[in-house]
Image (cartoon, rainbow, N blue to C red):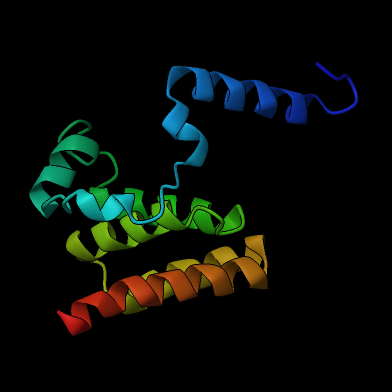
Length: 132
């Protein structure tokens, strides 16, 4: 392992490990995989990561908004996760305006490129409902 760039060395170890465990993982792309998983119902989300497990705590919609904020601030590079979060936010009762507001607020911390990328992804995901 190189001491010059420990992150690159660790990434290489992780890639090698994944290839040894399952050679198909070397060419696996997660894009599109999330479409195979159904959107959880609002009640199910509330039960599993909302007030069902933590009465008096954050509801599922708020937790998902925080998730979208984090995904945007970190550069909006996790497209699959942003799409899934937006889809579940919509199911949890968030309006398009609320979703856009969350992304815009996160843009103050993550920068305009991250905000633009997250807005583009969210708009694409939400437009699927228009075409259904």
